Image (cartoon, rainbow, N blue to C red; front, side, top):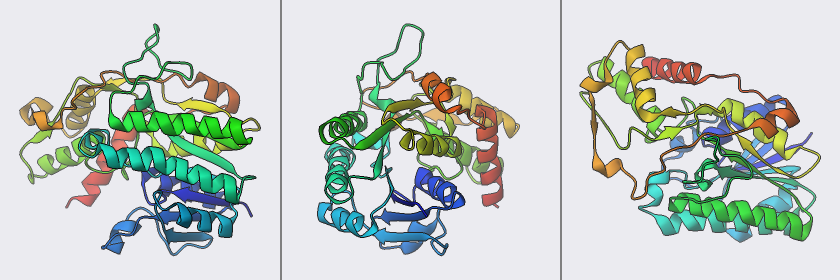
Length: 322
């Protein structure tokens, strides 16, 4: 039985990856940060499952990471933990850098000193590309990195230090450069779930308006379920390498909002207002990923379309909000 260790196991990606690996017969271990309300840590994963073991831990606690990895001796390590909200990274830049950059370094150190035979996956981000776009309007593995947020800058460090450890210490350490991926498990302060939840609340007469920031930002949105399959493919490739994971389609926040409201028989213009507090100090206008290397290497294709992703999220909130 293979053993996997997942940081951020109770997040959107961590929960889907856990279910996917358990379905493949893995023994899964993970860490969550201690919270005074333990129910919050179980909202996405069912802890009472066979072959699932969850401990308290933190990327900033190097000795704790070393102890866990030494005891577990995992075959695969997935670093999914992060301060994951780009807009909030401007409010807490030091914490974002400590967690997303130095946290990754801490885990890499624990990995190379306790179980260097394992395979390591670093959750890298399309935010690393920032304003850098190729002439064909895509971003790919060779696109220069020009991040526009503390989040993106910290992720560039984690990406590069993973590559550095791979070459310096002959480790099987890889990066998955994931473009935006959503699901009903996405935090409702992220724009997709924020829009869907608010639209359903308005439809049911429980809210009046929806406040958004930049509605003309374009993003490449996929489903987290499709992307965790790609993570598993990337980490198990016979060659340690880095891959972009994306749908190749880009939609604006405005288009996404219009789609969600129209599915609920409403006109978004009647309810949506712009609030400057949701604007970033430096905006990232456009992301669109070229995942052709991933598709060619692993025959990976997303099962969800943009429309089926949004439909699933709408259905989820229609059932949740009574």
